[in-house]
Image 1 (tube, rainbow, N blue to C red):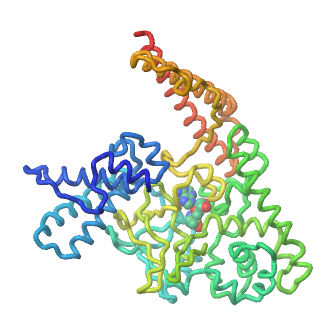
Image 2 (cartoon, rainbow, N blue to C red):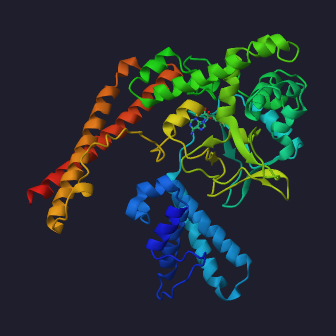
Image 3 (tube, rainbow, N blue to C red):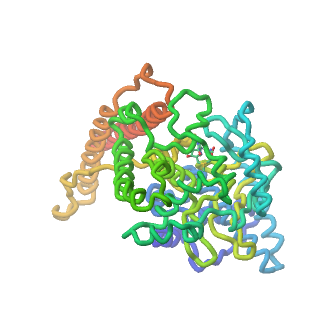
Length: 496
Ligand SMILES: C[S@@+](CC[C@H](N)C(=O)[O-])C[C@H]1O[C@@H](n2cnc3c(N)ncnc32)[C@H](O)[C@@H]1O
């Protein structure tokens, strides 16, 4: 927030929340004004990391990821809508023109980034249809239907042309799986006595049993979940492994991750879960066999539930201000995209007591409607969701240990002429860039070559190899940038 403020001030923007429409003349007035609004909105919509990477050129459209562009346009649209509602009639015409332009820009952005969805027609969607019918009977309103889509299991498809602001889906609170259910269950009095147990773990244990309850209110929800998460067989759309995450990677996939940081991440995450499981079981089954039947609380079932909650859990803010991780039937069919249709969701609307999923960009009938799961790196998406998003992920991270022993000239050098100072700075930069190049070259070597013959048909090995390929491409482009950076600096130093 402080960074946002500073950059806005540096760029000469007014921080009091007021927007001054400068008196541009000529036909380009609307475009120029929109440009200024966009520059401001891009900064407001960027977080600390995004601002850091955008650097001095924060307002340039080229450095921005489409999600920020969409957020920025959407912020402007909301601002214009609010202004129009507040009834400053003298400038209504201007506001309407700007509003039309922002809608047009959102549409154009959507056209640029549209992902092709291939619907797989030879799979029955009966269970999903039953769930939708159940939803309707519980007051769910939906402009989406469910279909199998290539590469992602099920997906939500728009049944009609949806505009910005339309509500694609509305789920009443009574149809959401939340903590309330565990509180009402017979396991709560036992679980609440366990030191340090979180409500999320309680929900997880509740869902492991509820999934087998023939009288469950959420039976159709559990029935529509993929049966088996550990099918490492070849399957064109990997239906059976939807919700299987990096946590169920087999030995070959783990081996394929060698040289990547994801290896450590998945191993550690799994170890953490195993410890958590061992702390609870078999003790709970032994002490309360009626409530925790041994056959429902195996390690495999525990891992299944963890994967379900990681890949389908949604943070919901209820009207009392409490934030809970919930399972939201039907909304759980929405897949993730780096520039989704639905950006803002998760807060229960107090007027309707429902969770609404409004569109931030249009979605045509027949098109897959995407949600944002959050600003996650590819390694996080692989570990906790079991997929790699299409396109370049601006949230990918590459943690680095920087050796702080590289000479810092600025501290102990005596005052120098500006030319000498400039040259010394260049030398330091060259030294740093060379050190970075060598670090990334080592990393590239550790990642090794792709052995195409090794590509197995199992989903986990394929995913691990894809991830490694992607890491290799990122590291290799960093090495190339460092190489050209060094060359530029060397040329500059030769002018000495
Ligand atoms: C909330 S569910 C979404 C619906 C899911 N496709 C299904 O069939 O139930 C999350 C899971 O969907 C899959 N998924 C979501 N977005 C995806 C994407 N962009 N590409 C591939 N798989 C995706 C992953 O398996 C993820 O764990």
